[in-house]
Image: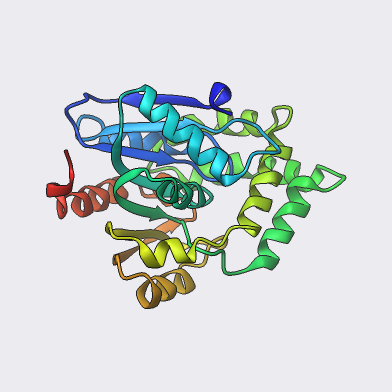
Amino acid sequence: MTRSLQIRIHGAASLPALIYLPGIHGDWTLVTSFRSAIAGRLRFIEFIYPPTTDGSLTDYADAVIRALKDAGIHRGWLLAESFGSQVAWAMIQRGFAADGLILAGGFVRYPFPWGLRLARKICGGPSSWPLAVLLWIYPRYARFRHRQAPETLSAIQEFVRNRAAPGDRAAMTHRLRLIEGSDPREIARALKVPVYSLAGFWDPIVFWRPVRRWLKKECPAFQEARILFWADHNVLSTQPQAAVRQVLDWMGRHAERIN
């Protein structure tokens, strides 16, 4: 998996490291405006997942950790978006030295299995027309949704083009199966580094109320949740400036952890 995992690093090695783990789409297209807004303040590391249909979450985690190590990065904050949260839990379980974890539309155990089954039917059914319809709608919706994030808006066509690439639909379907089989609750209960949750109020994919409720009750390391009213599931791309301010604030509270 490592050979096909792509890594990109922005910023000087002297800056604190923020490691972005993308969602089920698996690339860095939707984080464009967030990356632009955080430039010069953090060392931002991002990935494109390989289009595999047989890797485990441990395989994902090991590939990311190995790519970081090859780049001389041995610790940092994890910014885990949606599916990326499951990769983050696996990285922590595999011993990665996380200074902290920020769930951006992320979760521990996904609370609604029926939602995963529906998503798999859309992505992996015998007909691709539901996904084709969504990919036709999304660029039109994006003109409104990302009007405050011009860098992300400019990357939308690349995002849609990537989703149409051979094997991408199968890879997304496989990632949904990985979510179904993932239960990192014991990892979350035992975690010692700070955990934060950032979510969009209008999120129909990962409802933030049950996620926040579980973290408050079951995760001793959980510090705080922030809900951005004008954001949706892709909280980093729909309110990038507010997301950057919040991430910097949270990381700044634990500056002693940053080497």
